[in-house]
Length: 310
Image (cartoon, rainbow, N blue to C red; front, top):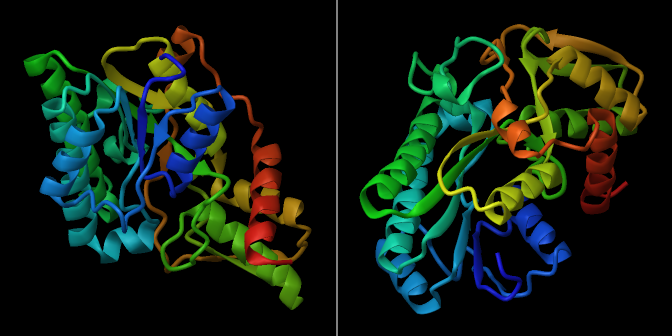
């Protein structure tokens, strides 16, 4: 990647997109183009085609998506399937039409079967049923992976797919009705401390295991794939180790400074029992995550305090 080449980051206001922009800028890339949702509706096929025909970027990072936690995924199933299908289909097809040969598509580890062997290898895609609560989102993201593969096979493009594990960090969503587990627990622990509560309520049993990756590490991996001229394929992006939700909650409480007890709400869903990614494919290329979980939570909490007040 030449520092002067035009790079389009779709979804630059989101957690992943903003991290990719930060990473690119820190490396000296100075021709980054972005559009807000108001300026460019990525579900509008004509608008996307006209934009890419006009701008003709050399590289696209497709980080735009409709995202959310278990509650949002389960209650807005049609929205998650439709909007994500439209965004990826429009951007990938219009990129090919405009002659954009290099694109990185951001997926999610939820594309893999609910009960597949751990740690999860890229080869396990489509080998079993999906987790029911986020099936529409997962199906949309699988379609994005297959779009990249198919355009590469038929048209000779170089479209790569990156599947991150659970991400957290700056610009995360802390709305308790739509957030993922990490930001939800950070907010709950912060409010419990401020309100003088004696307990922290956690969804589910606390036993499921999850892997967490600081979003700036994810952005570094995405730029690494482009800079190292990786032309195709599916790549898991993670840290290679996981923790139980209970362990996560206790670490967050420690960082936030809240010392109450944890009350597990067994009436709420646990989701997938375990979701640890096999990261051998990225490791073999020479990339590894840098940020320790506790350090990452401390960084995320300091950003939370900046945006949500003390």
